[in-house]
Image (cartoon, rainbow, N blue to C red; front, top):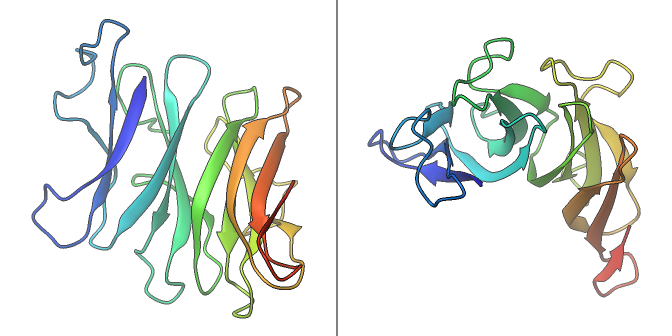
Length: 190
């Protein structure tokens, strides 16, 4: 299993993201650092991590990142090889997937079946309602040029859409569900 967590070991009031690989035996993978691999480090919060396999023994980790005080919280992702080494083709401290104004969070991911991921989150860029957005990051660490900058709108209905959950559709895409309040009470949409 791959495990990711928020870690305060640097002694500052803001957490960073670390990850670890645990073998089927229950032992920590000796290729990885004993106390975990630093994945997202910055002076501001890195929180709400999610993690999936890259399909080749490594993992992709996404999180909500507070390093930009103008946009409040953004969505970042990083790739770690099976060896425990952060992929040098990706930016240090993660690839930004969305840096739109007024906050994104509660991201979830699904494999695209080719080493990349579709990352889905709730988004407050309209400053009126939370909506659901998604972005595709390729195995190379590049955001898919066919997708809009800062993500594709999945649902922008009236009222709030929050807390997505995402799974692969087995064909390079994803199926996403979320809580939706357009009818007055929270319902589940996909």
